[in-house]
Length: 339
Image 1 (cartoon, helix red, strand yellow):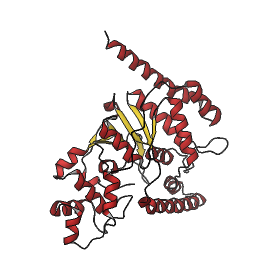
Image 2 (cartoon, rainbow, N blue to C red):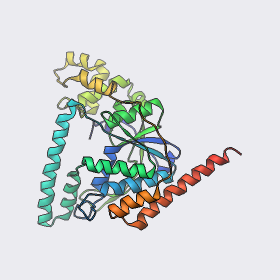
Image 3 (cartoon, rainbow, N blue to C red):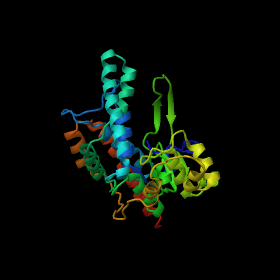
Image 4 (spheres, rainbow, N blue to C red):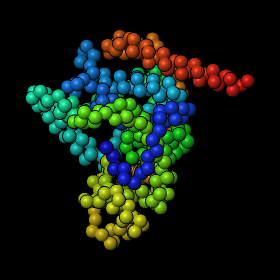
């Protein structure tokens, strides 16, 4: 979810191949939830192995990662650590939404309403510790690095981008811009043809590239003011001000300069804004990580996915072939530069 800044940003539509040669830090939880939501049976049931373990997230992780590696992208997945206390209200709200959606999914199935069933099933997606552990195991076998953030994954990924260790952050959430990521790439792991909910209409989803400096320049604001705008709108760490959307928040901050001065003129309660500012501007991140990409361990991947999780050997082999060919191509290109 995160903060809604969509009316304030200008996204540049891209193709996956436009990111060839780029290192991109992907919000791991964000991506896995997308896979869990999208990769389902017509009635909304997620993919499972013979023991009933959900495998939708592993399918998405394998095939989407292969797509990126094939075009020369070097992805690194960043996983959440312990969330700030200020996020507990948001976590509880999301849990209640999932539980309600689960009940409505079961009701829709009983009524034979498959369209509603699939929509509600997507909203009921739940990511467990075991599922995250499985995802990390698959990444190790695939030769793809991942980073365990001490707190928010988006904050850690944005920190890595600000340092220059990666070119951009891959996430659906605009929070990365508020955390100071220079470049945000949306739709990176969900590109392709998608059906609109409750409509017999399909759209082509393409990656979107958003630059923080363009957002700031367009509106004549600083990054610090963008943080204040986000706080007024509402983030995962505070409810925001009732009735204040992105455009109104922009107007207030441009007129008054910051939240403190706006509060002098308006009767507003954005919550403990100083603490939320600190979360965004001085996040809990780490520099203790290394980024190394290597070819996949074919035997380990096949044993894990096909032997233990009932994946199709043909499909898994095809994905591994594409990744291996990409590494060989990159290796040859590196050698050619010496001559």
